[in-house]
Image (cartoon, rainbow, N blue to C red; front, side, top):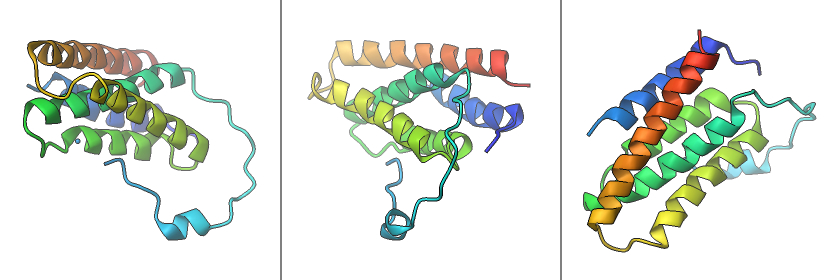
Amino acid sequence: MVRTARQFAAAACVLTFSLLAPGSVAAQSADEAEAPAAVVEPRVPPPYDARLLRLAEIIGSIDYLRNLCRNGGETEWRASMQALLDGETADEPDRHAKLTAGFNRGYRTFASVYTTCTAAAVAADERYRREGATLAAEIVARYGN
């Protein structure tokens, strides 16, 4: 599927606003898992794919930190990640898996370090939100319309 710059820009804008503001990536259903895979030619990943993977890691990290420091219940970051996956990987299961793994890696990295909200966890959350906002804005500016 060829994504238009407008589609990417819409998904990235949602993330940018979420990252600047002071959410489970949906699991595959049993029906989807059993469906036979169609033969698909390998696709060349978009030039911003490495940046998108880093953004997925950042979103996973923020999801963990925000829920840790705000006593859970915040789903905004997972919803942002799902919107990114829906907009970027609709017909590309390999990219979907790669970005989902990036989100999970970011989440697990902080889960292995922080079990309670500390000043360092709050500082990491702020630093990652700034990095994510900068990254999302850079992707949109460089690759969007």
